[in-house]
Amino acid sequence: MENLVISIEFDKKMFPRRHTCDGENISPEIFIERIHSPILAIILEDWTGTDERFCQWLIWNIVARENIPENIPKEPVVTHPIAAVQGTNDFHTIGYYGPCPQKGDTHTYYFNVYGLDGLLNIKPGSNVETLRAAMEGHAVQYGGQAIGIYTR
Image (cartoon, rainbow, N blue to C red):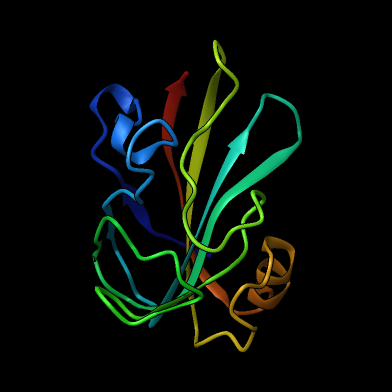
């Protein structure tokens, strides 16, 4: 599988407050390079130091582009500023939900981007397990992991 390069411009990899539950809770701008596939998907997860992952955001069927703008609307089907489909995160909401660890905790968040060979035919609002299953056999590129840290 060919590598993508993903980056997010955080100062010292620390999530800016505006992208967390303590701020505006809006998705950050994401930069992607070396795209050779027509469609992208992104999964943001909190890894708590165990094998357990907590999905903060899942978005797919993005026509390949080098820049995903910040503040993607929290709707199942997005038409502006980009066209995309979003799923239900582990907070049981649609769209992006930023870092929100317990007070005093520091968590690490991983952005993973996938280059797909075509659009995925799964329902808006699907969960991360459904997205991962749909990507099997269709993910031709992978980029990860842009990492962000947040202490509350």
